[in-house]
Image (cartoon, rainbow, N blue to C red; front, side, top):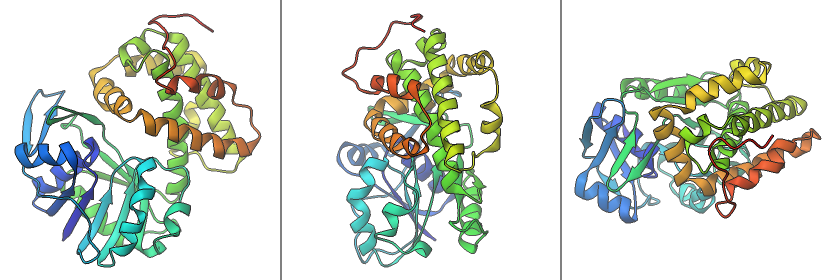
Length: 321
């Protein structure tokens, strides 16, 4: 079993380290400073919960060549970078399956232009963290989740195999019958949270102390859920649909508690700050989809400007609604 992790961001490193720890034949594709760091130090994971540091000597490569053979290639990178590598993936005829594991609103359309449906899956690699110097800061002690599914919603041999591979590496796999709907729902949630976060400059602790910013996120989320429903897109997981009926004050209370934590600092703030360009790209793609519903989304439209780093943020505790 040969596995390639395509992308050496924090999530790619976390998954590569877990597969390597299990003893799989694994490589990680890296370039630039990340390649230098991994080659010199290994993948160094600092766990913010246990305060422990572990080193994983994962072999590296700088490219995926047409003749390279892998059973699975896990593509864990920003969606706005994916178009540049699709011709490379198309040329890699000896790869069994490609797994696109990241933010995705466009579904299968971009990939179908280059790959046969039986050659790839879409899903999401759950985990969070950020690079600092030569270390990946993460919540390593928590088991990450991998969300995935077949286009037709059926269970397949490759899904069973991927689940077994990941479970052995202490990665929990959750299989959805409509993974495309799950990814669109995920976008509908993540963008409002990112907007709220960057209203106060991308600081989760400041967000916890700024109820009006959280309220913007809550209102924007409810707008997005309404638009998805209007488009006939199922809300997955279903608990998010139930939460959208909660009164605003209840959701604000939950989000305040969630944001006032080191876990949010590592898993959300650190990642979001390093991928702000992806968040802006992601928000624009979500707008393009949800605008088709005809549902008014004033909180999304008015406050998404804070995803632009040139827009000044508001002070902690500011009242503006």
